[in-house]
Length: 333
Ligand SMILES: [Mn+2]
Image (cartoon, rainbow, N blue to C red; front, side, top):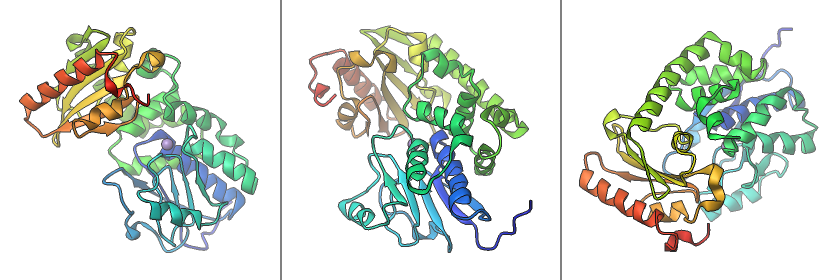
């Protein structure tokens, strides 16, 4: 079968560097071919978080445009939208605009564990979409996007192919490989995707970086009053697998880690997902005191490069708040 593209490609804008974002893009393409136009062709355009606000109109193509796993756009060029981010609407006007769009093609649920799951369930109900071919991808999108890993070991050792693909997508710098992966997600299994030469090569590089970071944290981190803390600021890292501290210190409740890349110093604050019930602090509120933010369970504070006095003062204060169970940030856990 050699379908003749009869129109411009459908443009699928998705959350880049994200397993759920890419899986949602794959699910959308399958849905569209199955329920709307079997001859459709697709182009995949990645979106990454930046300052909140309206998306640039130039992102949209001249034919059909869809956004998945990314914030709303008040554009008449947008034909489909599915998202589950709490911050999907940058203001009331955007929310109002959404309410006026076709209910079957514009889907929002901030409680959905993954955008892919939301898309599959909503379009199955509204258009009869059969997503059984993507069952395995969906299973992992739900686990990964809601960080519902069985154990720190599963989240750090990444022995399952889906978690290896997660590492590749989160660490990837080449957008063309991302589009190829989205395409393959519609055709072959997750295990076969990680066996592709291009994907395997990327994984082995990222894995080497990951194990080296794991060893550095092991050598440097200490546990005190249920808080793991460490400083990786000399290693020029923009991040690390946030489950490593709990893999090394299963009894820890919180983490405070410092990194520095070309842009900034980042103080990452986290809590142990396998000891959820022991978290006493709202980390977003705590980080907001220092100009940062995040979620109740994980957040970060940015400091200008080279500002070490300020950084150590903030780290010390964060640690003393986290060590104090009566701290006022316990409001709205
Ligand atoms: Mn998502």
